[in-house]
Length: 158
Image (cartoon, rainbow, N blue to C red; front, side):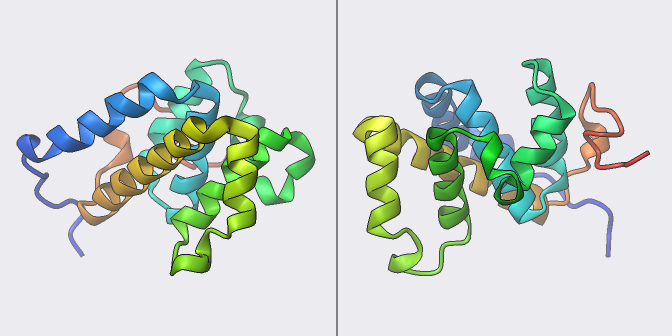
């Protein structure tokens, strides 16, 4: 197995960057971090995990909060109802396997807690990170190529 593969041509990223711009303008950073960390952990995208751990720390998140987010189902009591709904939707969409993957009860709860627009914007954030995860995993992006990452970001435990 080769370590890396040829990168995707930059022009192919244009639609992805458009989606990223849309999400950044509409989803609060707190929820973006939750979604990005959880989906990347579920998908085991080491590149995206390193990037989003680094970015969350830059925004003042502790390593403990980051680790709890990645394994949120073990730490539900640490999250608000709104955060739990966003994380549960992230899990459902990331693991999607048919129409019943995102039950009406979950979607209705996300809409109630985040509003209709907020729920749709969260969905787009989840779609975006899952697409980035698939690119990162398939092309074997190297997390060590990211600037400013440390051992925690890289998943290296002391």
